Length: 476
Image 1 (tube, helix red, strand yellow):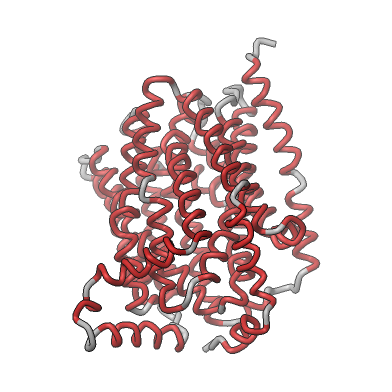
Image 2 (image 1 turned 45 degrees about the horizontal axis):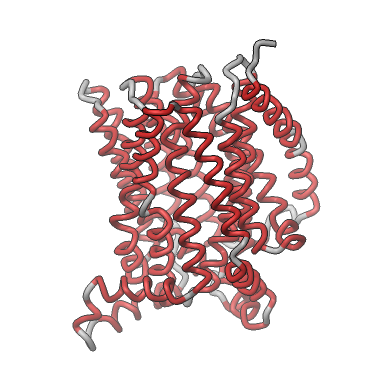
């Protein structure tokens, strides 16, 4: 009745995913009831404090995740090319600093690095409302803030992943990330809507100051976290062993080369890094267009965008509480490409959405549901596999190398996508991203070495060696 075939396809996809998403609370509730009332890891003080600081941080990040693009599109009237530059500025630090931060994470105490990161993030985010209050806010200021946030997140992300690994041990790593991802998903059931409403009624600059206060609270919680003794001694011994014997060991590049060489000579890590790099190029292109498309093509307000993201939290929650059973049934090697494939389907559906009231929120919610479900399926297995396969003395460097390899080309993807959208339009560009995302998933599915290596790595969780390591991990 006046709707184009593309819009009808979008409405059908929205109905299908919304119906599927309505089952999420039932499945999640049933799964949580069948588990212990409190996960065993959360009864251990070191992991509990890391988890608590992480969920405060994740909750606060929902504000800037939506507020910065809103500032660009609504207050500064950014074009698709401008948004590509903004997202590219946020991703560029991964290309510039990922490798050095891996060396720093291996050499220095992770808890101190994370505390420094909290302070830096708060300062970078506060610069936007400060510039707004002084009347000097511009796209240049916004890009500089985005670059600073990306730079600090490069250090924070690597240090946090290594700290979790050392705190829980490899034998419980999948369970640790399952607890973290499930909790983050539960936060996402409300945080995006709250963030969207805050931005709509307070304005994006004032909402960002709320995030600054939340980061200060997370820093306060993190003060009580102490590094596991084995991890601290590993960092000290690595630094000491680098110092007296060979002057070359004091240089940054020999340490960086060690991480690069380990990844390059491992066929599975090398192949999955290349696959992740292709996906990240597409994802950052999607990031550049998502809010712009929602506000200008779908006519959605910040509050409605936040409401649609609740569906994403539902999808991630469903994946978090069912991933163990999905892995057991299909095998992690098949779940990896399945997750990527769902993100490609989501981008394709996003391109054919309708701007009709109510339907625009439901259809964007359907996209976010499929996208976040797929992301959790892929990244929990990907991160766990990488951490399990890497020796302790190279953990920081290999983590940083993989992050560098996967995200270093992302700025090009964001900038190129913005330029393409200027020429052929937002819908066609998003549709192209979806098709390319499916191609990346198919290439991963056809790679037998990745599937075999991922299954072999995760099967180590049941070996006596890894179980012994799990029981011997210091919990002080």
